[in-house]
Length: 123
Image (tube, rainbow, N blue to C red; front, side, top):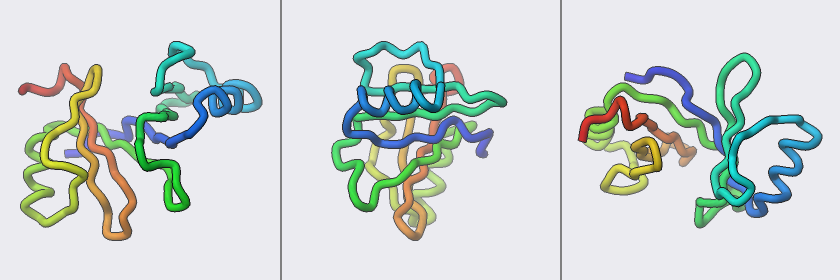
């Protein structure tokens, strides 16, 4: 079951330039370290926007944003997607610093990140 949009993310190639843009003219605020490859901005009115340099093949001519859905039970959802023939980005869940993730793809190849915080995940 999907709970909410966890975050929307853009891949960037130059973190300093991206941060200068989002934190300068757009005025977004973050508590992220200046050297981190993952920066999150809490948005007014709710929601989270992230930029990252951790994607090895993006951005590219076909790159775009990625939406991340907070899910109730990532293992059950991934199993259901797998049995339905949905293309997944890998076999195993990805462990983040505070979460578990898996990327799946819609019929056009757009990525959808499934995200579950550690306190919600039993492994």
